[in-house]
Image (cartoon, helix red, strand yellow):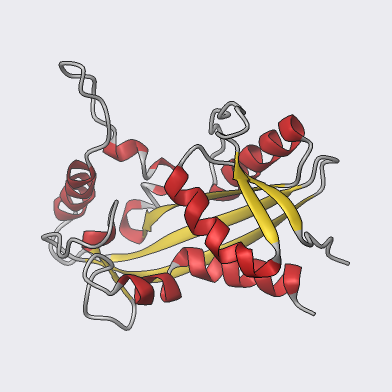
Length: 209
């Protein structure tokens, strides 16, 4: 029988205020009070896993052990079929700029261009199938855990289109749609996204009556 989360406090294994707000809003109807690992002063573990599941579990377990509270972590990214599933767990890493005149950070246009360049090098007939993946991992302080995986299949387009998304959204067109994630109304995107798919599975198992 699946262990139930129930109401109460939940550590979200992130230092990102936007992610805390998004997840907190999704779980609020179920009586869950979310607090971030950052607010508790917990360190961010190195993401040494080679899969989304490994990294999500790594982050959730580290937060649960350090806080003594049940923790939730997510790991997500883009996989491109013709590139052997890359960038995969390195989705964000492909956007990392080198330190230059004290200006580090992420350049998502550069990352999108890298993907496009690799596809173009394979020739014009190369399939452009891709998918966004999201893994949500729950971890209890005693070591028990649960994992929920969500996917949104689609294809890649070029050049980038739209301004409402982030990351690789401007080049990703979800299956059954003509617009990119960055052109679709945010409410619609949140309804069909990989994160929505994973959350639906978590809610169904954890909060079903």
